[in-house]
Length: 353
Image (cartoon, rainbow, N blue to C red):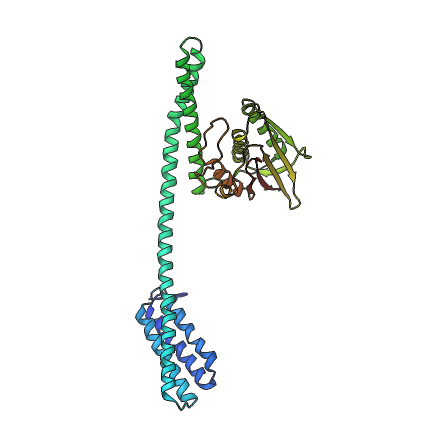
């Protein structure tokens, strides 16, 4: 079967290759351009080796045909007086043509294997995302109930039961809250990797948005006697962003800054307008800093560093990876500048549109 634009019959491909070789040999014969046309014999063999249904036997046959026709063009066309040298040259060319064809054929087979493996891995990844989504969704509801009931019991029974009972209830509340946060992150990962997250871009005041989140996180910072300071010449900047998903980014960066800052220190949030119609947001802490060798893996899933939270807080290694994906969806960039004992500067840019 031969289809337009895609030759399915390998014998037709073989015939076309042989016709090409004969044409090269004829031009070689009438022009006598030995060096030029030695190269052109390789072209049809290379295309044959790349064809999806080619076998090694066909490459071998075309290598013989090429070297034989070259011998004819060399000996008959240029009236070579030394037959043994011409035969030797033809044999060397046969080896070259055959080796080139085999190498291309081998690389093509390896590429097929890689493509098949990538397709298999893609299917596995899709199943993994589906599994994560189902498990995270199904577990979140009972954990939410545990968190809500333990909070209710603490509130209603404070002063009525022993402090040990209140401590156990508080532990239940904290553990269930942490577990829900992990499940939320897993849900985000499954949605991002499956392409199900669609940004809802709306024109809003980015400066006011960030100030609002500074205010929300200030309550958490006060528990460690940490102040969050806003520095910017901008009072208002209207641009398009997804409020919900950008909230995840800014809250994650602020909570990390609080988590890794020492008590009685300051976190600085800076907003500045760049020349290339982008806006830069920086969250700068004065914590322990991050070793340079560990900074490259920060934005990968389930990656943590040797730097530890100052009050024993937990880290899943998911927040920054999710933040990177969400900023990428906004057509922005995210990164970190840090050195040991000198704190960290986590920043991201967004286009002004």
